[in-house]
Length: 117
Image (cartoon, rainbow, N blue to C red; front, top):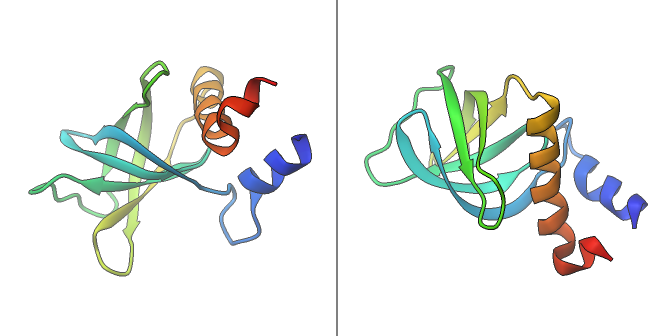
């Protein structure tokens, strides 16, 4: 099971950490929206209607995963997807508590109820 988790998290693309698809509410700064994917180093963020973020802007990401404690982490908007709908967000400071929370969400998403077995 551990080797499968490493492949899911690490991946083989150019990112330092592999992103796992998720669906959860979040805010970036003052803009509400949804997280589309998550890794230990960042996430994809789809802003609700009217939310426009600037690339390079420093924000506080407030992740609200169902069934988990909310996570607050400093972040930077580093880009957008090809369609300009999903923002690419890099976490700028991940302390041990934040790391544990992110890892818990990723493991639960990757393995579901099998993570505790």
